[in-house]
Image 1 (cartoon, rainbow, N blue to C red):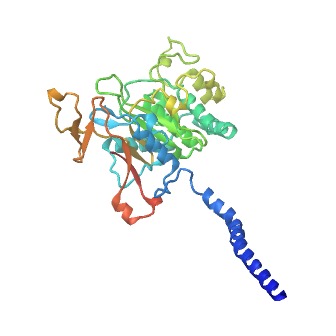
Image 2: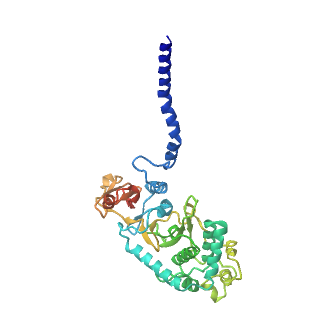
Image 3: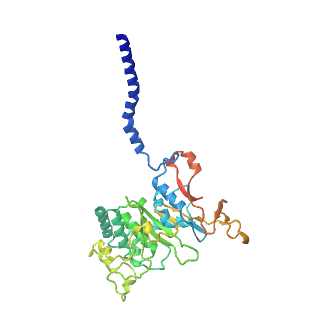
Amino acid sequence: MPLARLLLCYLQCSFAVGVLLPAVAGAANLPAALHRDASIPRDAEPGDPATPRALKAGIERLRTGTWWEANRKIRPELAQVGDLMFVLPLADSKLEPSSDAIGRVQRLRDALRTHLTRGPAGWSRLVAQVRAERVKAGDAAAALLADALVNEVRYRDGTDGSYYAPVRFFAESGVCKDFAVAKYLLLRDAGFDIARLRLVSLAPRYNNTPDDWHVILVVQIDGASEPLALDSPSAPTAKRAGDTTNEASASSGPSALLGAILAGREPADAVLRAPAGPLATPLSRSGQARRPLATVFNEQGSRSFERTAPGALRRASAARRNANVMYVDEMGEPWKVDGSGTFPKWRVAVDQADALAKPRPAARPLRVAAR
C-alpha cells in the first residue's frame, strides 16, 4: 500500500512538471517577444516589411490624386506629393533626369558657387538671427523668419533665366526662383540640412490658363505633419515698410525695413509684425497646393514628377461619344481615360536590374511611375 501511494505521488508530480514547465518558459520569453513585435512598424504588411510609413502614405495620396495635363505633360498636384518628395532620393542613377531638371540643378549650383565667394552686405546678420531663432524656438520659427526676411526684397519681373545669388538678388531684385534660392541659401547657412530643403518647379494648370511656371521652397520640419511651403510675393502690390512711391530707390532691392536689419539698426524679427509676402504655411494650405508639380530639386540632384501625356490610339465614334478612349504612351503601354479626363494613378516601380543585384528591400531604389 505505501508503495502504491508513492507511485501515485510520483505520477502526479511528473504530470504537474510536464504541464507547468512550458507555461513558465513561455512567460519568461514574453517580454522578448513583445520587444520584437514593438520593433515592427504598425503599418508593415506581409511581404512588404521595409516600406516606410511616409512612402506608403505618399503613394496612397498619388493613387487617389488627379492627373493634370499642361504642355503635353501629366503631373500630380503639389499637395498630393507632400512629404513623398523627401522620402524618394533625388540623385537616382536609374532615372534619367529631364533636360529642364538638369538645367535647374546646374543654375542652382552656379548661384551657390557665387554665394560662397561673395554675399550681400549684412548677410551674416541675417544668418546669425535665423540661427538664433532656430535655437530659441525651433525649425518652424526659423523657417518663418527666413521666409519673411527674403520676402522683404522687392519683386521685379523680366529677369533672365539664371538663378540669382543673394548678392545680385538683393541689389537688383528678382522673380520667384530668386526668392526661393535666397531662402534656400539662408536656411542652408543657418544650419539646416539640405536633405530637408527642396525647391519645386510648378507648372501651369492647363494649356489655356494664364498661369506661369513658378518656383517655391519646401522645408521638412521635424515633428510636423506635413512640410512647409515658403512662397514669394507675386507682384509689387503692397508698399514696403518705410518706402515712398516717389523714391526711385523703391523700385528694386531690399525694403527700407530689410535695409535697416542688414545694417544692424533693427532686429530681424521686426519683419514678422507686417510681413510683405505670403507666410510659410503647410503644403495643403498653401496658395500653390493645387498647382501641378513638375520637378523637385536641390544642389544634390533632381526628381521629376511628370511624364509625357499619352497620345490617342483611337477615337470614340460619334455613336459612342461617351465611351472610354484608348491611349498609348511613349513606352507603348495602353492607357484608358473616361469623359472626366482622369488618367491612371501613380505606383512605385522598382528597377529590376538593381533588384537582382541588391535583393534586400531596403536597398532597392524606388521611382514614381504611372500605372
